[in-house]
Length: 360
Ligand code: ADP
Ligand code: GN1
Ligand code: MG
Image 1 (cartoon, rainbow, N blue to C red):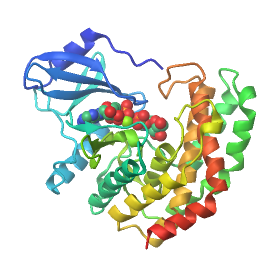
Image 2 (cartoon, rainbow, N blue to C red):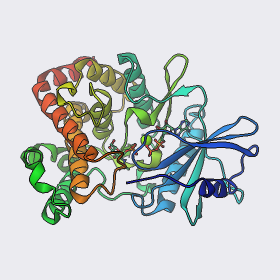
Image 3 (cartoon, helix red, strand yellow):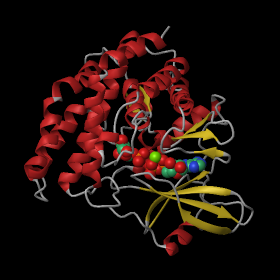
Image 4 (cartoon, helix red, strand yellow):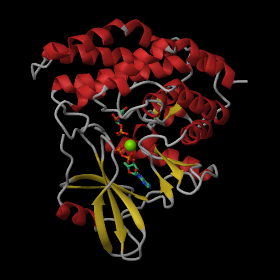
């Protein structure tokens, strides 16, 4: 899917927002798969993030913005001023605007920060865990029932299997025949990876306010000392499972290769990275229950397999959901995720031991 936007659409949109000064520049920014992000600088030197919200993915933009406003207001009031995203209001006092080019919002650019695509050290990954763990902990008393479910069944693994099977049956691009080994691997894991969702339904795992997209590039670290600064990309904040927030970070940041690496021999799950993240998460989020702690590794396995299945579903369907820059990229992304699951299963006992050790 191509997300490029014409300059005149951007300039037209920017006139709706109350900036400190005239716009000096506006350039594409960041590497997200969903929204279109631009870095805007005005003539006073103040920098902003302008985003076109992907309303193909987020059907109810009102509900999405309501969730983010409720959560950021709560965090601002709770004293997390520094580490919380701040909106730039439109000239008529709203937090987003709609025009013929789509839905748009602006954030204050968090200066002196870095956003990593891969950890430069275990310590970086530890700090990202501190950011996500703190976020979870700070929201533990937020009334979860107030949040809208902006993407129904987002991390409902059994429902992801339903959509996967539907895509296979449709096979609109004739791609199913080239991906049979991947399909078989995913289907053979169904019972194991659907367990967290069943435990949620049976009340064994608590529903919490979760971020639901805890990739390393959704956290900003201090540029100077690499300390945890700010959790970003709050579009998917919804009721969910803490073990999936843990797991999504592991799937992305504990991998030894890029998400779309083609040489699968480079793709493994680093146990050192796993330990660093586990340490940061359990220390900064002391409210986790015994069952949540015991299921952290399962959270990593499930969310990794689920993500691989989502990439393959999109590949089979013709790449309409995740932004791609080249042919076959979603299939490559699927393969790295399945390789990670394979590797996690080889290292399962070590993962479980590390979780136990880091609770001490
Ligand atoms: P997507 O949903 O497409 O992933 P994000 O909200 O994660 O969009 O933004 C894309 C990138 O823009 C981030 O990875 C980060 O580099 C940068 N970014 C987003 N918000 C800010 C901000 N407030 N300050 C600095 N950088 C930001
Ligand atoms: C998308 O927006 P971004 O790039 O942070 C996706 C996540 C996937 C991720 C895979 C709303 O996240 O669920 O795990 O790509 N976000 C949405 O890299 O579907
Ligand atoms: Mg992002």
